[in-house]
Length: 81
Image 1: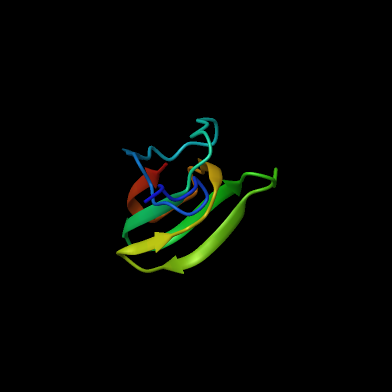
Image 2: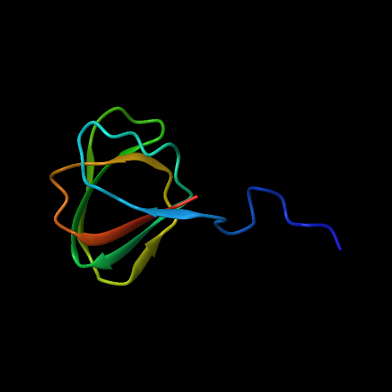
């Protein structure tokens, strides 16, 4: 049986996120939010900051971002690749 394509298979790695306005994460497949709060991010194709308000603890967001901004109040964030 062939493996799923890169577009459909799950993450193959992850890393804890340090909130920063300058640190480039590369392109994520998803973010795991362990502690509730607001999530300020820069999406792959958008140069401005977008804030996702009131993200609950234990949320998996299938979003492609390059930065998790310092204004983020959510905690225990993991970038999945």
